Image (cartoon, rainbow, N blue to C red; front, side, top):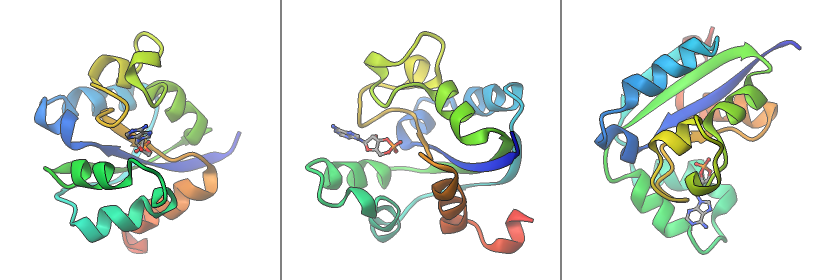
Length: 139
Ligand code: CMP
């Protein structure tokens, strides 16, 4: 399986719980390389743009309010089979349904406040890394 990139966002709930270090260490232990990383406090416009695919969903407003309530950590990750492996490591969207030992099971609170975001395809992994990081930071 070729090397892929995927975007991790450590969400405001996880930063508030001060577990961003645990999450990063877990990702490093899983063999991910950090290509680019920074902390940011997203604007409403950035959150709405990032989650535009969900704009018709009933939870869209709540999701954007949550994602802008405090800092997040943006991490562009690289690994063989990165997209699927990362999804396996974070677990199901709803922490209550996530497998034991996954990041969302360990650190998430509910389907909205679920500790971290993951890209759902290789194409979206590339697009999402590019949404937050300029090309020269992804070399
Ligand atoms: P994420 O991986 O960031 O991608 C989209 C996000 O929408 C998802 O994680 C959840 O945090 C959020 N989401 C999905 N379903 C719901 C829901 N039913 N209610 C609130 N938020 C949701």
